[in-house]
Image (cartoon, rainbow over all chains, first blue to last red; front, side, top):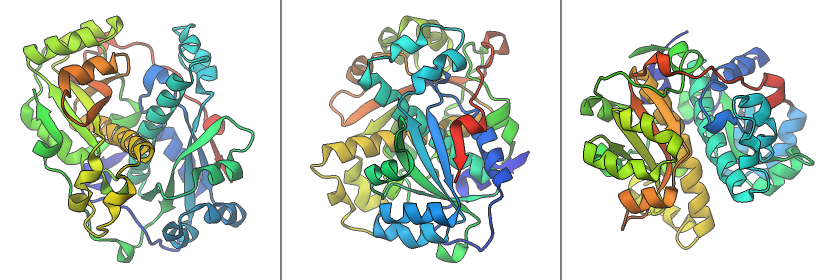
Length: 192
Length: 192
């Protein structure tokens, strides 16, 4: 599919207001079928995603959000809960078949599990946002929520924990904030 | 710039062998000028990047790597050290001017600092990889290294800590491993 860097990077904005236009389930499948190809260490792919779409599920999510995030999330056609599976290493025999020992790098190593799940599910969050934009969706990623409450409401009795949330839909440019500045190359990077 | 989803996702691979073809400094500037637009919470943009390009800097990096990562990193035209600035919140008055209180959300809060720096610099790592691919570069991201050693060699006397490394160049397909499988939609996602 033809896309542009402007669509993914330069012109893309974090949206706060949404057109009254649904997101098809098929589009969510296509989104995953793009983002899944992004690399993760040992192909561990720890991200797990709940696409909160029904009014019932949305009603369970809203009280978990900080107040400033509630109205825009209520209006978004879909809110993705991007989680990380802390038992991701159980799937390494399937995902990383060329090294049968890979599971043992993590079993009983809570610090390695946490760092690997958090780093790689966040990387996958970056792939998720850019894959959504490639499909013409707009994103509204959020960190302002009660993670324990989201975990209890959506991931109870699982090994998944919430990383961040991301509203999805077709944005209404009228709701955009002014764009924040970015660090210049020399403030953020160096060639050595 | 016109690109394709195949180039960024479906057909892109983690590379281990590199053509003998340099990466121009200008390309590294263009890479940052794309990835910088990716969203981060409160526009905090904690990623800091060292592009290790000179033989002298490469020689300091190689002993910090796990053995399996040394030869391919020695051969890569550039190795990016993607770090996270744990003092990122000092720049919030510049990056998030519409809320003068934003700095106080982090000052003296080491857990919030660590989680925000790690999550958002990893998100930016995802933007980095896809921006590199948009520019025709190939990537070889790596987690197998001694983080304390890289920190000591490259970020001494700074507030930056290493998140992950990523080789950059023009890949030689002869060095590709077979592609790992990915989880099916129903194994990783649910629409609720």
